[in-house]
Length: 211
Image 1 (cartoon, rainbow, N blue to C red):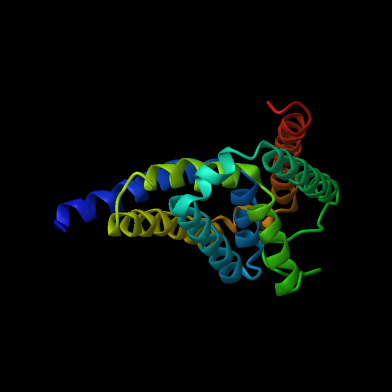
Image 2: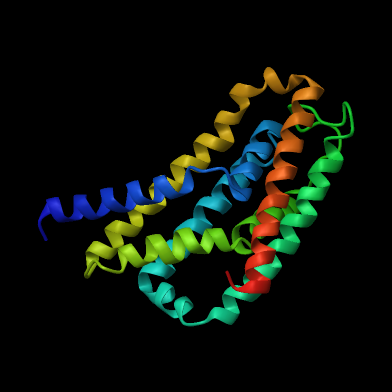
């Protein structure tokens, strides 16, 4: 197999995944917040990156085609995602009203590793946008390749995801001086809470109307 073919498949997977993942969303907001808190950052980054890799691989292997013919599954997923995001959004808004409750390090009330993984799993597996990006869009594009070129495409897409989550999670500490002020944390949580509720409303509409 010519090297230029494998390089092209790898690069296409990398660029497509990067373009889709670098956007304001529930999963990215959660990784950012954990990075600012410096709380189980490596675990969150690893889980999100591995989750994306598995979903992209599943999409390329044929899951994208299977999901397109099951609208009821998409509706159920949207309903679960709306409930999860609504609960987390309300919680974030409540935190934004508690002056001094958060710090830029994982002091105060900290979550266990298992609790953090459970939340990361919720943002990954109960978020229809993740399936839309990784399984349907990236997966469908990768499915067009033949043989080992599919593997190179998945590797490129998975690497883009891993690099992004690593930069977002571990790079967040560079903003620590800004978030040393409680007001900055309250503003971040208000932004996250509002974003989550908007996404929840969109998903609830999709679950109720199919649009």
